[in-house]
Length: 400
Image 1: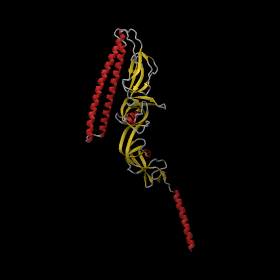
Image 2 (image 1 turned 120 degrees about the horizontal axis):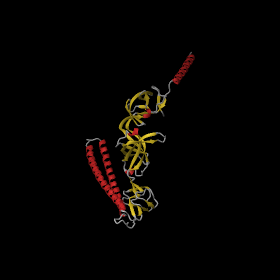
Image 3 (image 1 turned 90 degrees about the vertical axis):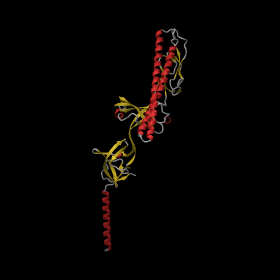
Image 4 (image 1 turned 45 degrees about the vertical axis):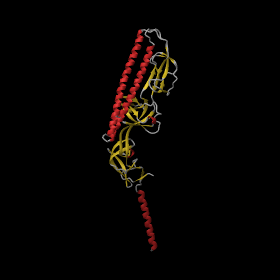
């Protein structure tokens, strides 16, 4: 009797095991997924485009008179000082000159003098504007310390003060260029004596109008040159700007004074900058794929300390990231977790080992991260890369 009972219990146990195994085999298996937590933190929305550095100001040294140029010893990249002789010209021996030639030379001197006077007045006006902006910045900074004005207003005023000072420096450089042009005109006039007979030929030394470095040499070998022929180009590599050609659809989102981040420039870290000019006129450019695109030129200044980017030069490549929106404490998830459910955005939220579809309101996006306006709470976990294998209620487990 006992033996029969044992056999019966054994058979029942085997049947239960087989039934349980069969049921388990038909149960849906949990799908391995990548889960990410909803978090808070800073978020930036940027427009990215390749840009190139460019000297803000270039000065072309040209021949003030026709003559025979000696070989230029300077090389590209050599530093030069303001007033340093960079080119030597041996004027051609003058023939008896008619009064008309002398009158033209005198007119050139008069025009150069007028240009110098105008440049001096502009420099004075720029200096006055810069002084005013410095005083205004002091007032705004004082108000900011007392919390009467916002930080954005203080930063904007500081940027305007810096721009005003840069305009003053540019105007001062223009004065030196005009003064150099006047000296060249006077040098030419010396070859036209009042009596109509040329003086003994002498060597004319052409000096650099500004301090900087040799950027380009148009001609190294000695030989005859004519009046106004460009000889070499001088610029200051410490005074750079960044030139970026944006799609017109992106350029309308860029504002003057907006923040810019410069990455992949070859050095360490990220450089900062500010938009100075968004040109009002666009142009057509053919892309590498042969597609016509409407582009707009945007020029930005580098605001990082010069010692951090001293190795940058003219025409260097970098990536410009224009900040069009920024938040400091933003509820966010990876944009890869979003998908469309009809006309709404949705995600799969992990709920006790199962995926639960939930619609939500999405704000700003930067391609990698999305701002969540409503629908999720901080520290909830969502599926990072949902695919067709996941439905509402699908068992899920974190990928190992």
